[in-house]
Image (cartoon, rainbow, N blue to C red; front, top):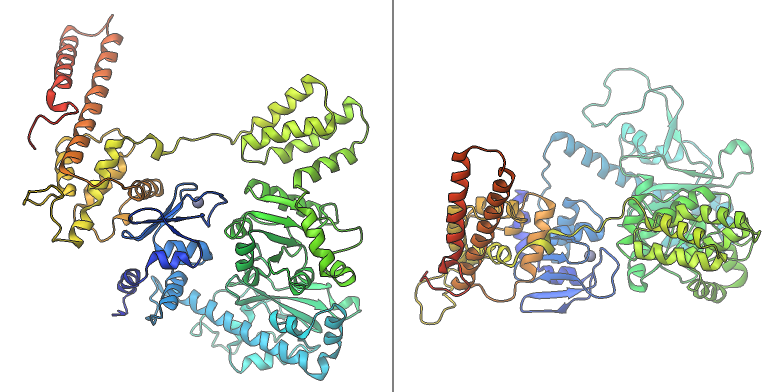
Length: 635
Ligand SMILES: [Zn+2]
């Protein structure tokens, strides 16, 4: 059954995997119809469920944010992994053995090989550092960890280790297993010679000449090593905290450089441990440093992550947003890294996070706070932060910066706040904020108040775009469902007509195809491209959801199929065709009338005559009883 061809494997896996069960691992689903389940969308923040799973057609669709797809797409998005990884994960969940992965090009295969090997290097390096921590030379590191209040359990959970004060021990340990070229790619080593950056490598391309390359040595020496993991819990990089007082020992904290497996902008420290807790508790705690993060986690607040001092990227915000859009920011936004912090907060505002600010007493970071005051005090502070919204914090700060109670000072405070407000995507929220600011700053000038409101609400990027789904007519819906039923008919060849007493088999797909192909009635409609894609595929489709050519069409199809309610009958399909014919004729009639009006003064007699004739013909056609609501013609 598990064919080595990945396409076959994917298909067979898709048939075995029940999307309702797989999604159920992440979303609490409730039965919502004959074939639908619904729950709270994991891809956007919502209080009432608009996320649906179609049990027979095996796809999901969110009416809120528009995400949709099959079981692979779901796992890919919710876990933030690549397609091959999603296939692998689902196979694991089902206990199906994986065939060998096939790649589309040798370069892709080689890159994947390098990445796998680099992960192995990091597994070995982590073990090596952990072992060194236990050895006599790790005494100082153990002492340091103890002074930071970390117990054995926490040290093991975070796989903390020690990099010895030697440049060669790690190299010698790893060289037994790995190629030196690979070690150069790992980010764990340095070398002196001005050798150009090593490119992507393979074992075949290893220089065979006698050319001497400079010896490699450990980048991390005499440092406590904190592994950085991807959200699957695989070690992909390290942060090393120096134990040396010597200035020549380099920076206090040293990070791995970017490698084929580590991209700083995509990783959130501790997300692998925290993600399920963030989902469960529906909020995350963001702290600045890894040490803070570990302390907060060890104190029992498992939904904590760290930004590692740099500004958040959009990718990180989106990644985090998949688990919860509520966040408590536990660092003083006024401190040294203020600009990075401000950018992080701005980005979270743009991504529509609900942000609260937890400000600890001056001089306390979360780590110190917990060690001195205990976890109950931290829990209390966390609880209090629920009252402290980010914008309250910003307004307080603006008031502190421009304390004078005169008009000039108030204008300055408003101008300081405006860029923050304009980042808020929702116009309604911006409007509310403007009101709140007027109140809190005591702006009594009607002019200033008006200006503030205007600046806050007129954000360039605001436009409420009517979705295609809202514009589509009921007739288009019916015909799309009919066309989409082609696969269902194949699946159940024995299905008989819903009409009682009829032996003749009713095939809605064929009926719709016949009507649409002969008259092209769908031209100019919202769903034109989607209908065209369905028509082009005919009845030879395995999965109707794979037919649409654009993301927008795919969403439209998902939305229509998800809300299938009444059964299709020859009458509903015929009625839909008639409705489209009416729409078509009316539109054409309007066109003709418009042209006639424009040509009232000019235009040749012949043209005018032809248009008038067409107008009469269209009017007559529209009066045809066959177009009426009641069916007069036998089908
Ligand atoms: Zn959604």
